[in-house]
Every structure is written in C-alpha cells, then in structure tokens.
Amino acid sequence: MIKFGVAGNSKSFYDEGHVSTTEAAAWCAKRKIDIFEYSFGKGVNMTDATAEKIGKEFALHGVEMSVHCPYYINFANTERENIEKNFGYVLRSLAKLACFNCGDRAVFHPATQGKSSREEAFARAEKNIAELAAVIRENGFDKYKICIETMGKLGQIGTVEEVVKLCSSADFFYPCIDFGHVNARTGGSLKTPADFEEIIKIMSDGLPFEKVDKMHVHFSKIMYGPSGEIKHLTFSDDVYGPNFEDLAEVLVKYSLNPVIVCESDGTQAEDAVAMRRIYEDTLLRIS
Image 1: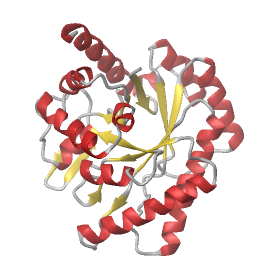
Image 2: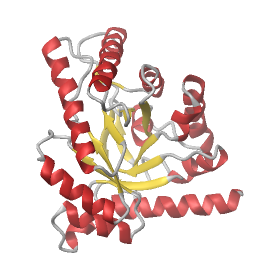
Image 3: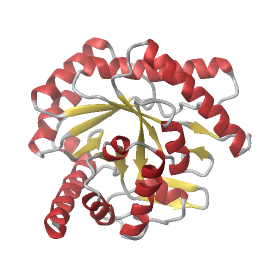
Image 4: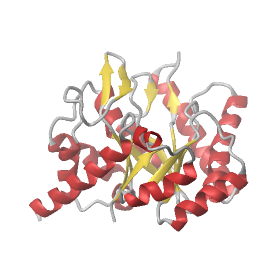
C-alpha cells in the first residue's frame, strides 16, 4: 500500500504544546500519518535507549519510522579517511533504525561534485557506494531498504539518472526521488503529469519494478534559482511547484506503492494529509 508520512515535527505539533518526539507517535496516528522520518541530519547522537523508547511508542500507535542519514555525507570525497567516516555515518544511522525497530528505510545524500569534473566525481561516488554496499552486508544491515536521494543543487551528484545507476549496485539500494529537488535543479521542469511520468520511465528502464513500485519519495514545493534549490516551501505556494496532483495521476496510472514523506517547511503534517486526500480523490476519479 502507498503510505504518507512526515519528515520531523510540524510547527502545529509544537504550537499545541508538544515537545518530545515520543509524543509525535500518537499525534501522527490521530492524523492517519503512516510514517515518521527521523533526521540524523546534523549527526547521530541519540542513545540506543532513547531510540528504543521512541520506537516502542511509534510501534504502539502503528506508525512506521524511517531515518535520514547525516546531510554532510559525500561519497565523492577524495580523501580515504573521509570515505571511511561516511561509511560510519550510514552504519550508525542504520544501527539506530534497528533500535527503533518499527521501520525498514534509511535515506542518504550521495555526493557533492566539488572541484572535480562531473564524470570524476560520479565515478568516485559510484565506486565508494559499491563499497558501502559490501560494508552494509558485512554489518548485517542488508535487510533494510537503503534509499539514495536525488539532490536539488546543480553542484550535487543526484540526478534521476545518477541515482538509478547508483541503485543498481545492490539489491537493497532503492531510489529516493525527491520531486521538489528534481524540479529545482531542472529550473521547474515538472509542470504536467507527463513530466512526472518521464521520471517513472527512466527508473523503469534502469531498475527492477520492485524498486520503482516501492521507491521512497520526498515531496515538497521548493524555491530555486540558477544553481538549483534555495529553500523548502509549503503547499500554499503558487509560484515554484511542483504540484502533487500531477504526481498522483501517475502513481494511480502505474499502480505504484511508494512511501511518500512530506518535507514542507513547517506544514509537513498538514500537507501530508492533503496529499493523501488528493491521491484518494484521484484514485476514485480515474478508476
């Protein structure tokens, strides 16, 4: 089944007086939010005991959890010491996912181009991510879906085509298609259902159907400029896009069952609920 979730807590969560992530479990369940993505964006500093406590609360309320690995991961780095550190960032994130014990997905950013040519940076990232796959297997984390994310800035490795190629190196690597990122780095190319369908076709040409069907999705509207992504917006924005209605048509057309995590700026819960409504309305209309 398709699932809708949130990246972290909405502004409304805090406005209602909540402070702890453990409280988010019941809060999300009340709103029929299926999955909560916990970000270790600034580092994996949570204790195992805390992770177990949070995970038990989410499991009790029937809400799954995914994790986002640290944002500063860069598998195109030229220094071997830094690549080893990146392996550690992913492994520690997966260890916490295991402690949560109520989900099976982790997301990571692949790489930054830096001063290298695009070809050189991608080749390094491809080699190091293939090695990451071996490290993941050695540590027993290959039962999880580990999702490689499309990126929003032109200087980052993470086009749809690049992510598809990177995901081919292991059966547990799945695409995380951030449609806001794709739209931002292409100057607003996602304007119609056909534009979204083209992305599905690119993935279908390069990956098994299971990886397309069960892909991880990040969705939000994003402001962009000449270099790509600037900042995340809310669904109330009517300038930048993309619009979820267009993606919903394609998901229904291809009968896809992804996990869709909303990353709107402070309204992720409200916008996730809106996405579910749009999807269900589209399903009724088309079927």
